[in-house]
Length: 282
Ligand code: CP
Image (spheres, rainbow, N blue to C red):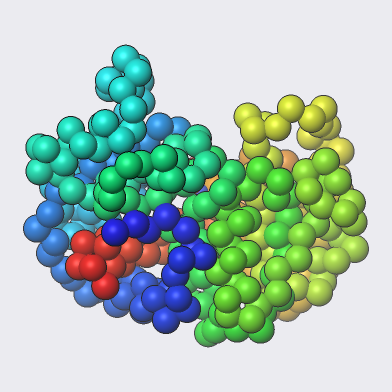
């Protein structure tokens, strides 16, 4: 069974995962007597750690492989690695890779939870974002969402857009032309939206010449632009935040509209629900 993209999930399955995550958040517990390996071939703090916390909360046996201290350095392929781990009795894998849709090259079926592939999918992030949105608005339907920034290189954008549109919410973009936008500025449009989601400027993924100061002036959230937001609107960011680039220092984690740490908290419960969904074959 694969859990690789939001597009393969039915809205009822998304609702089930969020409902189970809420039940875990309210104190519900579950034991899954299975092993899981976390294979992270690209850096991560939030996704790796919250999957580990989720696995520990579910009493799973947890194994971790890092790219630089394993036989990936000797050229072993991802699928050969999975086959060898399966031979040891480990049958579920949480995988992050730089390669888009890395599972499409596999010759056999494996139980994969995609923790982010290249620029394409980040399904657990979109689900934790959806849980955070539902907690704040009581619904995922008919909301107006603005995604700000590097949509050209962002798997967070792709997965959020697919998920939110499944529920009839609209997703618009504001970004520089070279990063996939139409060059409108944030302050021209921010007042129209319920949710404003900032994306990290991914310096490691794009080669365009880029002025951080100019980006911040036109697309960064500051005291002036936050004051233009609707009264009940919120702002979000998947992290890691480039402080003072996407969001002004004094607003991050402190402003009442900032939901960034709620997103991180919800990540643990959403990942518990995803592990239940996968390991119990729901
Ligand atoms: N949001 C997110 O994927 O963060 P990490 O890269 O730290 O896992």
